[in-house]
Image 1: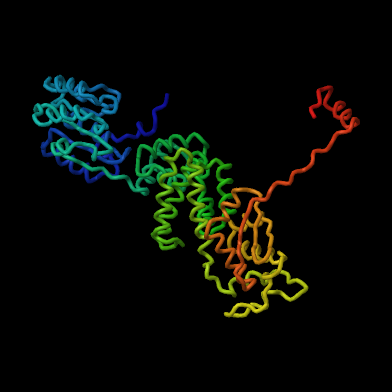
Image 2 (image 1 turned 60 degrees about the vertical axis):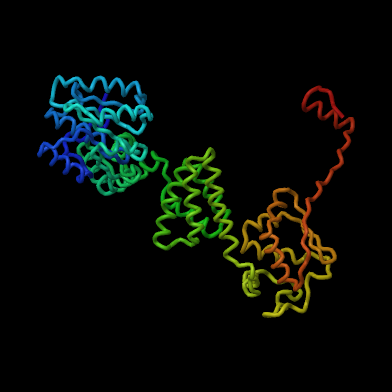
Length: 473
């Protein structure tokens, strides 16, 4: 069985550690001067070298050659995630007084130390307060904030940094060359970006992707990670910001069909929104932008990430749809979209609408004709796509100054019943007619169709097709 790349290329000396020079330099000087502390705390993100440096330091203080395959009795590693109780620490406290059989120090490396229980921390504190001269503790954690202050104060603390993308890329390129892995530079950059500053995660991904093709390209990495191309993310954001609901929903559906998960899309969208916000290229208010970022952050943890992502984007999309044309729309802005509409044989009512006074000729008032309705729909179609989708399914009826809209579905009625939607329709009708109509709505009653009676010959035909059976009348 081959060795995993992240283990094969794990640093074996302080000089081989990449990206943590502020720590390796200090530790090198400490070893050179012989100023060894009894306890060290290594904290920082995952996969940046905490455990590697702990092991290197344990070997260096004992002047032992670094060999992962060899068992060193003087170096004891404890996983606090699975040994977190007080009994384990009590057992450790009994053993620390035994002098090492080989080497100068007995070194205890406690990984994920923040997982210890409160009683276990109290027991550990007793050891740290009066440690034997031959014992060194190296505590490692990704969440130092969970450690009691009493523990932290008794350790020499080193804070590790996430590795910047360029250094990770360069390191991956060096490993790829050693392993004779053919991979493009942009594929390496994507791996480094996906690793989010973790050497271990990035190297593990390189190991995985090296088996996908003889010459690994960017598309191979994208497919393996399920990451959508930048064009897909930009398209989703563009449809959202322009209020194009149909394009947004179609692109979301296409993304799902291509295997791009909602959690990953939310993460990519969040990064794109943040970047455009910093570059002042985002057509959203700061409140809208921060609310959207917050929503995108909650998508991966949702029980239905796809639904939450769709709702989050639709919320912005619908808001943009309505804010692009203010309610106090001028006559010009309403008439302009209608210039391309074929005029009827009679004189167009819009021609009688002067600026800024209301028209003298009334097209809708005191009439029971709904010939104006297509013009209303056309204005709404070009300005309010979502509302158009609702109103085009309605059947209008005009009687004595009251416009009643009959909807076939309760969902459409509820959507139109939103105050902003009713106001939009009221304003447009008023502009066309010069009068404020009363607008009501109702659910159209389904047409009950009579059940046809079957003649004896019909029954015989049915029996011939389906076989003999009892006919229920």
